[in-house]
Image 1: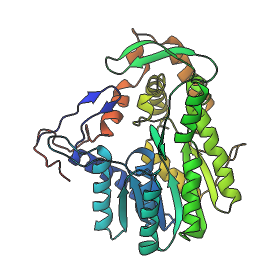
Image 2: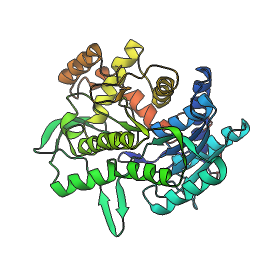
Image 3: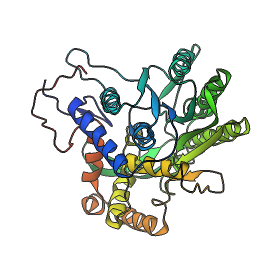
Image 4: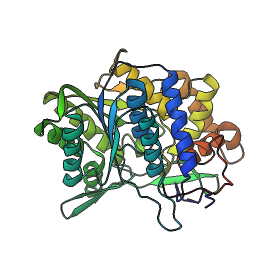
Length: 382
């Protein structure tokens, strides 16, 4: 079938298998160009199908030559529906890894569940013995614990917050007001996006004897500028990220070195859903591209692996690795703030890189990739 993008709200309901494969190949080629790292050799990536998780898996496999086991939650094609982009990304990754003799297996299921944890640990024990790195890169809207389903929310804490935003459906600049979360909503968001499940994974791996003595683990976070603080860093998601930081300390105290990597703002399925953030990202893209300091997921993760294995790990006052260092440079943020203050419906196209935003958005689903014939019939059953 001929596959075209179908966008609804902040998600694309179709994905292109050839496009996803080409996008994965581009990331692999980038990592290879950066040279080999003497790093992790057996890596578990929890949340491995898109964005930072996929880029981490690629950096481990094609940068360090690591065997990788991924955990995803994706759907294959069914009838006239394409598979999810994460499904196509994973199949492409496994194909390229196999071609180079790299171990690559994937468990598709709910990473929060005990059943998936057991399946993964059994695979590790049978195939790899132990792993020496665990990447925790889950970004989920809900989590089931027993009979209770917790749902995360994108809200402020304390009071409402009003600022500029962009309606991605029509590229209209407007104001949005984000309402404060209730205590129950904050607790649910922490339950979904905090560190409890990360700790559970590490504990389960340790109990099973599936972690090397020198193993490290890393989870991803974001801080951002003051523009986004009320509804991110100081919002319900921010509370979850603070809990994630606490978990990193607990895990380290219990004998496994745990890092929090604060990453740059990028177009992901998660960030596209957050009010205000897409507009900020589109301004940031323009500023950082003009300075030659823009990075995508793969550039960020290859740079992170370079720090973790052979580079210098500089931590901030809270003990976090700051991969957002270039984003948060004073001159970058000054230019972003100036554009933000001046921006309205009449000039936003001049002050933003909205084309770059949309290019990255469509690329998440395998569209707009150079060299792919989007008019050709493709087999969506990969």
